[in-house]
Image 1: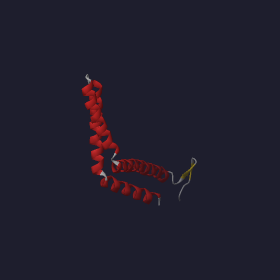
Image 2 (image 1 turned 45 degrees about the horizontal axis):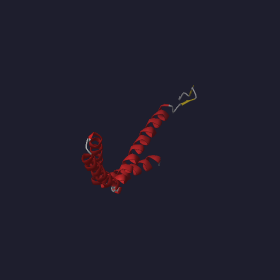
Image 3 (image 1 turned 135 degrees about the horizontal axis):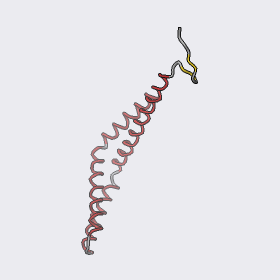
Image 4 (image 1 turned 120 degrees about the vertical axis):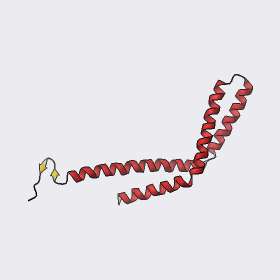
Length: 112
C-alpha cells in the first residue's frame, strides 16, 4: 500500500510539473535577469546607471513574484524529489529484509 501511495504521489507531482513547465521556465529567466541586474548594479559607477539597473532588478523581481503557478511547479518538484528518496529508502530496506528472512538476532534456522 505504501508503494502504491508513493507511486500515486510521484505521478501527481510529475503531472503538476509538466502543467507548470512554461511558468517555471519564465521564472528561471526572470531570476537570471534579476541576478545579472544585481551584478551590474554593484559594478555601476554613476547614479544614472544605478537607477537603470535598479529598475531592471524591480522588473525581474516583479515577474518572479507574480509567477504563482511556477512556485506550485517548484513545490511539486520538491515533492517529487522527496518521493523518490522515500522510494529508494523503501527499496533499500526491503532488500535487507529479504536477506535476513531466516536469520533472527544472530541465530540460524535450518530448513530440512
